Image (cartoon, rainbow, N blue to C red; front, side, top):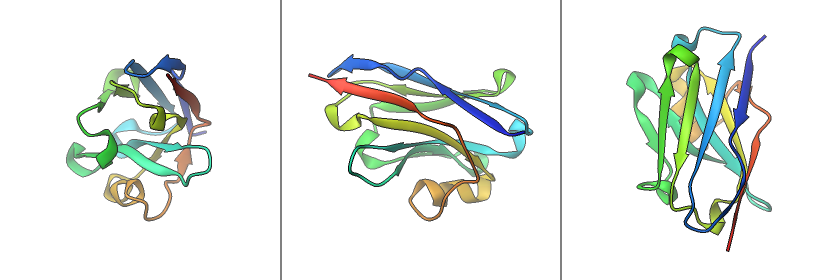
Length: 126
């Protein structure tokens, strides 16, 4: 079965850093793209950063210059390095997977990927 497992969420101070991990199994890693989504209390889910066709990297405007998405093919794992964290980054972070052709659209808020992890909590406190 397809599985996506997130890890790395924690409670951190404003300005701190975290690295989230998403380990994938149950499908061919090379045939899919993986991205990161988040949902803050009282807000809609939003795409944070996603790989798409040709390994294009999408970032939502609010995290540009602070977050970096990367992957390790040997480990079937995608990472999200988060620096200079702000209180508004507080959310449950999910990784999700779908075909590369479509994930960019989902990341931009148009539709939903087919496979999801259970999420990991990130809390940024002053």
